[in-house]
Amino acid sequence: MKYIKGEILSIDGFIKNNVIIKDDNSIEISKDSFINKSSTKGLIIPSIVNAHTHIGDSFIKGKKVDLTKDVEKLVAPPNGLKHRLLRNASKSEIIQGMKNSINEMEKIGTSHFCDFRENGVEGILNLNKALENKNIKSITLSRPSELKYDKNEMKELLKISDGVGLSSITDWDYQEIKKIIDYAKDKGKIVSLHASEVIREDIDVILDLKPDFLIHMIKATESDLIKVKEEDIPIVICPRSNAFFNLKVDLKLMKRIGITLMLGTDNAMLNSPNVLEEVKYLKNCSNVFSLEELIKMITYTPRKVLNLDDCINGPNLSGNFVMLNKDSLNPIYVSKQNQR
Image 1 (cartoon, rainbow, N blue to C red):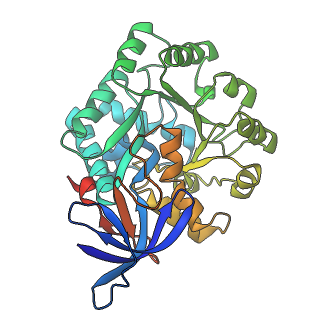
Image 2: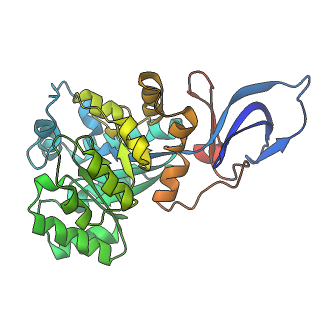
Image 3: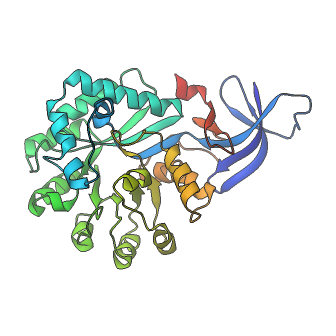
């Protein structure tokens, strides 16, 4: 057994407690003061959820490629550098890159990640291959192989994915993207898309698509964000990726309006898929959100938005959990369930 002096993150906030982690991986709150017992100090949190990844481009990190800081030239479909490299990469190369990112996420206690999966059916099959024998789950949001609606392709995509995760409306003919999203909605699947990342896009057009959540919204105006709040649509922010492109989220505005926020790591070719690094980044570069608020963005909030069923009961973490060093926020214990 392990004896811990620390704080447990419940849905209502941090609770200071003495904790026993039993051999069966359950947690027990104890009144024992642990006198003469070896104990560790830390923060105990639910297992981690990375709300936005693109791990298909993980293999690019191993290449000596000059990554431009122009978003469109780097990642916009169909001819951004990322997409050109994906087309020329071997299947084994892509899968191995994915495995490397998955291993990194598992190591820090990530139980779920929401991946925007490019390359149609093949992209999903590659991800599923990379996930074999891994104790981590992907909420896989698919994307057609081309920027157009094909009913047969959509039927196949939604058989093997949780929904669709699309690039911004600027990339699409509106009628094509609407057909894709309407089809996914009709099948009861998740719908998400990038929005107002580099330029402001028409929020009314975006909201007409009825997305379940949006990615970025960097260039959104105050009135745009108010409309998003009124529709109760969460936003995933990826601050390290944004910083690479010299973009900055208006955290104060989003907090003032009351936007529901989650954190993601975005493209694996740019950043580690360790979403704790997003927490550290925001903690160090701003004081807009408390540590409790930031950690909820990678635990409780995405669980609620993504309807995950591994949630936690009160102060007793009945599912997977992670213990963080209170100062460094690095994991010092990952529950055995996460390590299987």
